[in-house]
Amino acid sequence: MTTRGAPAGPLPRDLVALQRFATLMDEQFQIPGLGTRIGLDALLGFVPGIGDAGGALLSSWIILGALRHHVPAIHILRMVLNVALDTMVGAVPVLGDIFDILFKENVDNVALILRYRDPTRPPRSAVGIWLAAASIALFLIALFLATLLAVGRVFSWLAG
Image (cartoon, rainbow, N blue to C red; front, side):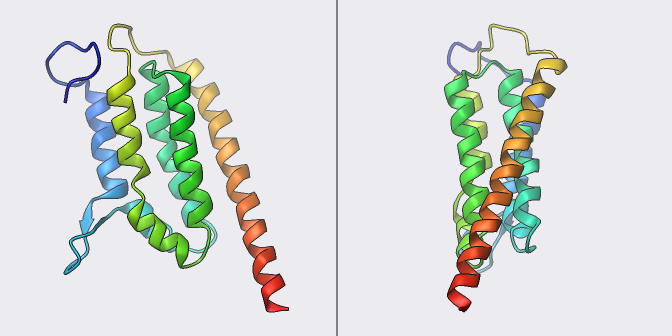
């Protein structure tokens, strides 16, 4: 796959690593008889309380890659929203597990990097990336905790 404005040739090693990571997170294992592929993200989602949060933190590595490769902010926001959606819906029992199997945010996010990165500029340094990463991680953790609180309240309301 060639990227917008990219010279023909192999991808940088860190982007190849992100592609492999996205496959591990979303499509590593095939469910026998169904032909559907799942990854570590869906498997982590089965762990109550912390599985979806762990998946979101792991998925943030791809967002770091987008920051490193000068992906425009609007597409980074879309990537964060993809992870946030997966985290919020994933926190809902049963429905979230089904959603985790069907929604492939990591593969989608790597595709966004490959499509919108700026290969004409050298990758960003670690300092700016880590500041942005800390902000994104805090946002995702807060969002996950708020979702757990909301789901807990709904279940307690339904229980009477």
